[in-house]
View 1: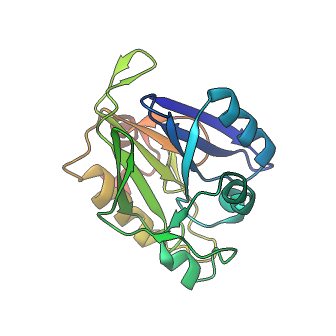
View 2 (view 1 turned 90 degrees about the vertical axis):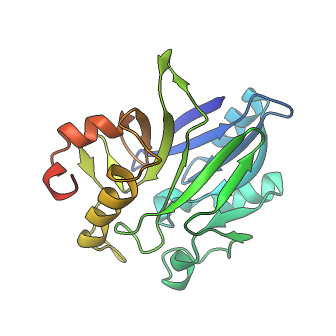
Length: 211
């Protein structure tokens, strides 16, 4: 597995380079929000082969460098159409609109798409159960949650397109009650440190609203 977390820009947004070590070392770039040259440098140092840009949502701190990354590697952009329709992100139409139940193949890794609105109307999360080791620990999988769920906190809903009830519902139904996810899934959020589903079920300051 290739998994590189970059903390970029004035809002310390997490950009992820994620993919497979097999064949051509295919990777996707998740949320290229700032410092495009640094993202490109890391990709080159990894000897990786970008195949797509994925957006968890369209807010500027997650999407500002989409055009440069797409243009540099001539790769498709994928995100939810509701972000475009609600003018959360209108720089560029997707080459592939993503919705609930879609899958993204990265060589031998399959990413599953969840619609998780609340922070923004077309917010997405991406998960796979095919990653079973992280930092030497056995896990059941990983999930990229964007600005839905953070370590001990949640994403804001007092922004354009935000809805607190939707946000809590997304966390509850799409993560905490999702039969395909376990407490031993590692969460890679849009800001701050990694965590696990189990830790957020037990220790998140807002847990009473979604557990």
